[in-house]
Image 1: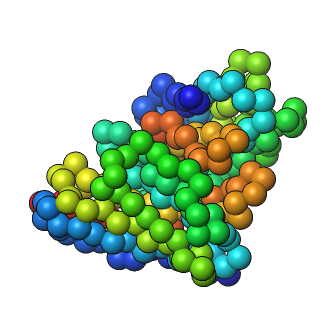
Image 2: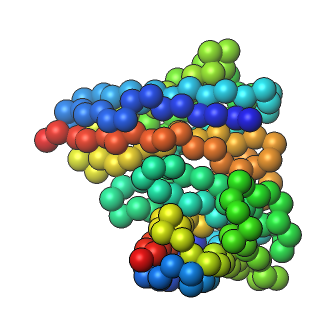
Length: 113
Length: 113
């Protein structure tokens, strides 16, 4: 059973640019969540999608957005990048029900110069 | 809002010994789940163990067990017979009705050969 796949694994951008990260969940999982991990702030919840609808949203500015497709794959987009957006972005998939135990991907490491 | 506190930033254990990682949380919800995740240097977040709040029995997964004290809102992880491969960052996490994970700051565990 394939795990959660995130692409790209590493990327470097400059301030002001935008970036799109992709996440393919485990087959059969309908929930996809995104987390930002930084040394200073730790792990912070960005948003969760379930059946193509945003079900939860964290406290991030509107520059951070996401979507989910009918095949449950998800993308997150960050526009007008700032230096502080440098982070490891983790995607996790789950069934979306009950404990909704999450399985994480390996992450996308974004560096903003 | 729910909070998760891991007050120890680092711990060290001798190989084959037992170590306990502490975690406290705060919530007004009655139905929730608690987790311990492991993040090795590879950055892949791995679920170690989970506990349903309504279950009085402490969860156990091989060498890993928890001490869940619901009234005290405490959720510690005990690792028995520590192995070199246990060296990683460990995160305590909470999820309730809104299905998002709230993480603690994490603790870095080193294992001495």
